Image (cartoon, rainbow, N blue to C red):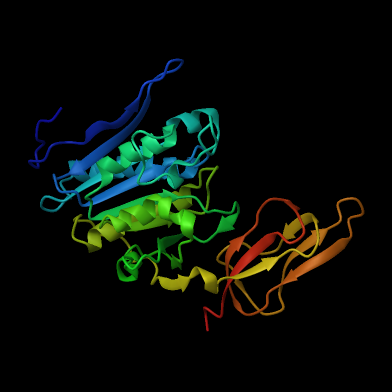
Length: 322
């Protein structure tokens, strides 16, 4: 229904923003949910890859939260927020990270091409609908599987705004210098088309982490409150530290075997501290250890039990707490 509620606003609007017919299964549909007024204030996108279950969960909970805020009349003036929980339902259904037919990545296809390959057409259809928003938020998955600190990530495009990114109140704001293939990501293209774009990273991807999801939702609500989009009080969060990704120190394994970590993400470590053991799986003997090179904080920690030689085990933010 499009009838106004008691606050004078129309309730949550559901829309299919992209549809693709299918011969053998139900049509491919990307749905959006809009809250508040008619202005294009913020667009939020959940999972774009089939294994991004945490990101899908966060976006769904974001819909639930904003629906409640709208019913309570918390949106200020004509500000509006749109949420697209799932941009790749087919890959979710078949349990594949990328497009099942050709293993292509929708998030490497922007701004898209409406006469191109399937994922190019999907990207073009989505991007056409999400242009013109003042702010864009993507719930993203980390490029390496493992345990990492929740953070906001932006690409250095000369359009980035770290001051705005700090308003989310996440522990870190990470700036990444884009390489050529990054120019086809949503974040990069959003920025080029005059949308302030932010990628929010939760600590999980394929498993639901409710605590991490609550932190991401609170971060978005905090930002919207600080930008006078929502009349809502949320706790202050963190005083975000801005990092350049190249400043993170990578610690790699010197042997292969069973990996036994002694620390997790966001732990403080001291110089010389043993962070992990690598064990020979046949003899049980420790064949290598990983030491902290300086005092710092663990930004990323590998969390799967098997390790290959020269594999990244940790990324450390050095001397952050000094």
